[in-house]
Length: 177
Image (cartoon, rainbow, N blue to C red; front, side, top):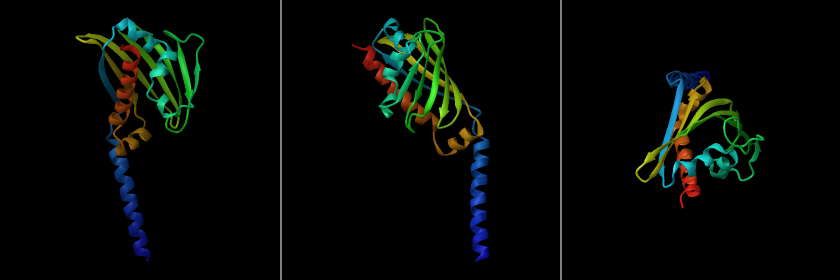
C-alpha cells in the first residue's frame, strides 16, 4: 500500500514539475492583436475610442456582466480620462486610463485588480482602408510566473482575441450606418 501511495505522489510531483517546466519556457510578454475594417471615417470612430463612457458601451466585457459597476473620471474624454469597473467573476475588477491620443491612435494603461493583478498597454489604431477605416486593437502584457502557468493550459491569444473581435464587432454596430 505504501508503494502505491509513493507512486501516486511521485506521479503528481512529476506532473507538477512538468507544468512548472513548461511555464518557465512561456514568453515574458504577450501581444494580442485583432483588426477590422469599419465602414466609417476616423472622425466618426475616434470619439468611441477616446470617451470612456462611449468606450464601455461597445466593450465586449460589459455583455458578460450586465450589473457591472462603472466609475468614471470627471473628464471622461481624452488623455487623462479613466474608468474603473467591478463585476462578476467573468469581468473582475480593474482600471483603464487614456495615456495618449493622436490623430490615428489611442493608448491606454490597463490594470487588472481581480481575479488576478496584472497590467497591460492597449493601443487602438486607425488607418485608412479602401472601404473605410481599419481599426487595430493591440494589447501587450508582461507575463509573471502565474500567467505563464495559466498559459500552459489556455491559449491567451485565442481567448483575448475572441473578446477583441467581439468588441470590434460591437464598435462597428455603433459607427456604421
